[in-house]
Image (cartoon, rainbow, N blue to C red; front, side):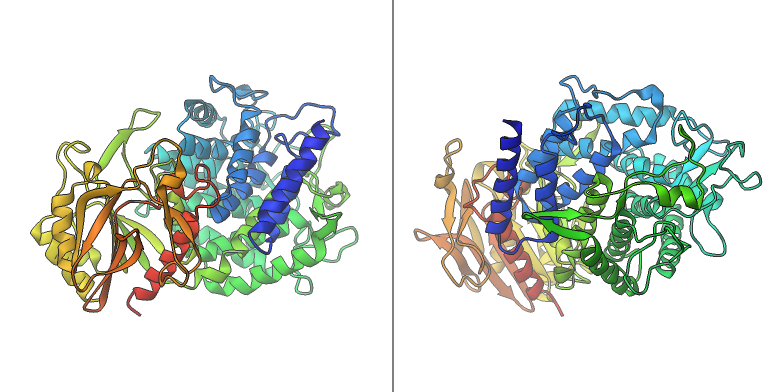
Length: 636
């Protein structure tokens, strides 16, 4: 029965992605993942129960990226199901033991944080807190580096940076533990200080602070070789941790410089013929050596993400593209409709039983397998980055600024900390704009937040400015109303070429009088009349039909907006979406600028992440259309 259910799941996933058009390599590989590992990383052909393991974290980060890219709820459901295999209702983690002090066990904490942020379920927070507490107690080397595991005393491995630091950084950013970034930076700095070869720039796999381990050089404490996947772990750790670093953290620039040195070294050892990387990096063509899939995927991912986020120059794009083309040619195969990844070494380590001495002969004799989770996860990550490339140039150099001054609500997180919420870029639950932020980023547009009243100075570098649902006294004790001085600043900014997006709400949940004072400068007025008053999950009551050839929404036919505050217009404002004679959305051209207005914050996560709306409603696709249109309105 389990085999039949697994096969049906595989078929249903395939049909879903094919229905979206030509299926990407990431989607094809995800279908394989959910076919062969339908229940966590358990496999029906295996007799041993699956354990809490880092492999799953790599795969699920790739799956998470696909969820954001496609808004297909199947991917989120798979993430949640995989973690629920381990996470008990009280937040305990099945098969996990803190006393192992194993950095490998921390990686899946990133998925737990995602699940907590989206669902707000306390069990995910408690489980993630357990992993954070492990890091508080993790044994350290004499200069403060985390031991890789309790059973490997005094040892730092490159692998451990990926296992711990991105989670550590995300936790620090989420729960305002800013001082932790100095410790996170220290791990990267110490690893490079001890393990980097000054001649090649490559990093050795491991470092023994005691210099007593048999594999360790008695002078340097270093293992003898440059293992590709270890370098891959380190590179991915850098680009995954850096986005969480505060811009004013003094160590941030130092970590970026480490990434730059890493990129130089990795590029030099890329095989020029295939675009791939060898299992032991500095011995190309030596007997027994071979191009290795997981490391090649990791290097492609690191370079692409480093360029996308501005840490690395665009000169690395050809290197990454060549690497990805080599991966597809060498490692991707198709067997009875299933996409597979060949060429991943199953495991390589140092010490242990039987003993692994870190020699060249040891590395090249480890088993190479098909569809290893580490390789598959790295391929998903690399593919997600590659599949962003076609759209990144559309809004390159543009910035969208989201107001958090007029909309200035607060709540408390699971740690009891006060946090800004309701229509925020970083907010991943139903109320947030994280999906909309991802869409902007996927077109190369930088997302920023304005926590102060608008001024000519703080709007100067913004191309698009979004004001959503200004607060009433019911929502905020002392709301910041939109005053005449604010209106004058915004009007002049629009007139000089700015693009303003105004999203209201139904009249009971938005401060309309002052918002209308701003809107009326552009010929727009929100009335007290609302429509689409949806009852429960009767989604059809919220349907808005978009006729063909709409100038803003050419790709969609049906979207969902509930409790819409209707618009009344005067020149120069014009309606762009209407239904039954009611104006739903409008555009106003003033000077060199543009204003887009709608009576609902309809592009928040609840209606763009695919988990609630039936598939017939195309809000996420409409978000893409709107963003492309907004970019076209911006100053050249």
